[in-house]
Image (cartoon, rainbow, N blue to C red; front, side):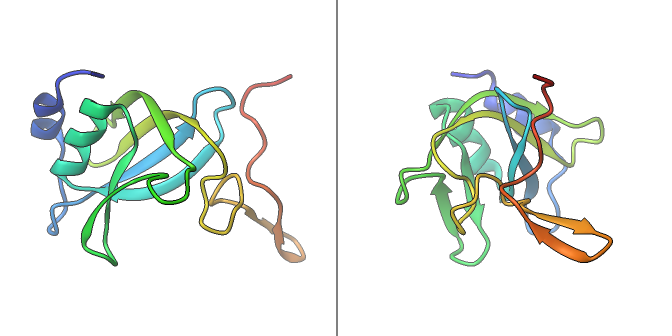
Length: 127
């Protein structure tokens, strides 16, 4: 277990829908893999099972990342921001994180010519 889920939940400032944004960041590279939403139940499941769990706003249900795709995320650390209104999961991602099969959901860069696609932001750890 990663820590005290109830202490985390008590510190979170959920929005009017009972949700908080969660950023998943790759532990090895620092690359931001994705952003999703979590409710208290998703946070509790993540801390307890050490698997990235979110709330699907479209399906209105919990979903554990990779449950159907196999592209799961083992969570090593859960962080809450200074205002309590955003969460960071530090993860080991098994496979791509985006539903488009890209490594990161942030695979479109803004360039002088418009948008350019790649496989996500460069590593935050210099080689």
